[in-house]
Image (cartoon, rainbow over all chains, first blue to last red; front, side, top):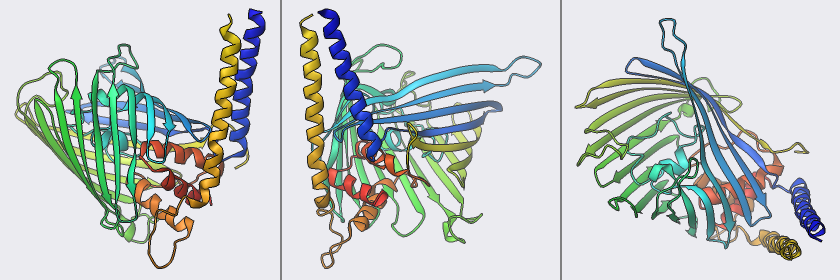
Length: 344
Length: 100
């Protein structure tokens, strides 16, 4: 009897799987594999490392209501030691997020699992290596992001969307979870933003509260301005934590006005980012510089055909603990294809 | 032991529920772009609205992929609906633009 019941369950599960696959095969919702592969290098204070990396993303829809998605990072850091010694290598594996999305209503999406903390803009939008213009995150990135992800639940969506204005929101609760890949602190917070498409102006605010340790609060706001008819982009964030605060502002100008986006010049995008952090009181665990720091990042991206991009940057950092130069170069290939073969 | 048939029946019912839940979405496709008005005078085409929504939401962060197979266009939009907090109407308009 038990055996019969098991077989029945197994058959039902198999049937559901086959029906889902069959449905995906005839619709526009075939599961996909996306992400990027890159070869990055960094020279910081005369010390060079090479970081081949892969950041795959898998999205698997289950009908129109549910979406399973995950993004992972696999990076091997290779540091030449010279003097006949073998290279020092270290492998980093990280499940960046693994979540199930339920599209409950037109304006509400329920997320469960490990999700990126919706604080400010960098974590959710610019952290994929195929999107961000710089290899490294801004100095203030640790403020409010709780290590970039939380394990728990999230409500998010669009409150209002018209041609002149849109309002989005995201709120979350993360539980205290131990473990390697799903480690999370008990915290809650949220984010809201208003976007004016005609102006290309976006203003957002974020808040986060942790229910552990000294129960720190974090808040911040961000302003993005990207004029509709032009390749200029200005992005900025300010974040305030218990022991430190800071900001970054980044500008980019794609030279597509010169002979078009596919010309040799038009594929270039000069970049500049200014960052400052201010230390209010010492906290060796918050991930921010130990002393007040100013940093200027000069970047140059080159967009090659076939989703390949070359990133280069030079940064000069000023701090009472020491000044430094950071050089970074990388080549990144972005991929996107169906999870299994079939007709286009 | 008695839970096994119950589990199997539950799974089947769950699948039927999901399958039925997607039907109204398809029938709503025609009304998807209506709330997003561009000009009061001439009602915009659905692809125009979709392009506008694509520029407003997707292009803020990244360039469009150079090639997008039609059969994953729906999955891409679902992914972006969650990631970029798109409304259902905006997501449908963008899908219509990406895979008319």
